[in-house]
Image 1 (spheres, rainbow, N blue to C red):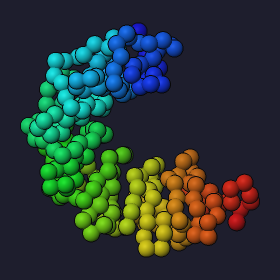
Image 2 (image 1 turned 120 degrees about the horizontal axis):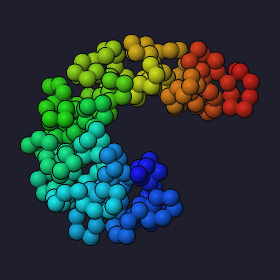
Image 3 (image 1 turned 90 degrees about the vertical axis):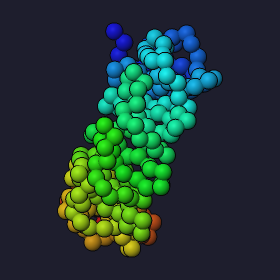
Image 4 (image 1 turned 90 degrees about the horizontal axis):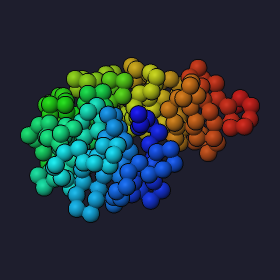
Length: 238
């Protein structure tokens, strides 16, 4: 049995490789990674579609663009617009959009024909009534949203604000913390939207195993732990 996690894309992006050998004989204009249950999006000289691990199409339909399957659903584009399909190549819903993303945690970002962003459910139903200038993918049940006036916050799976705080920028939550920016710079917030510290930075990364990489306002590169210990890179605590 083929372990799809070990399938790689060839250096020229025309086919897939398994155990150092081509997985199949056909060559494409472009291929994408395999996703469960062993399906990859490809583009040939004529159209885009999906193949199995033998390189054979899994349905008869053809598209302008096709993307990987996530949670059993794939994004595709044809002459009618962007939408999502099942593994038989059939539309999941009747609506068409100017762009769609990939499903994450049962929800997906789409952009409507008025260039507004929302999240939809697998059956195509909007997850909430609000429309935003931009929304991000859900992670741990929370997504970033940006309003038309440039302010950013977080919502839950029903579109409700999780903490009600607004920032100039915000990032996804990772293990209970998210990045954010106000007029003074970047910082980290907790699930209530409260800053973890008073300092502000030129830029920051999320916490990974309790440590975040940051750049201070005077240009120094430091690491900062969740409990507030700050160290210069390669040096002692400040």
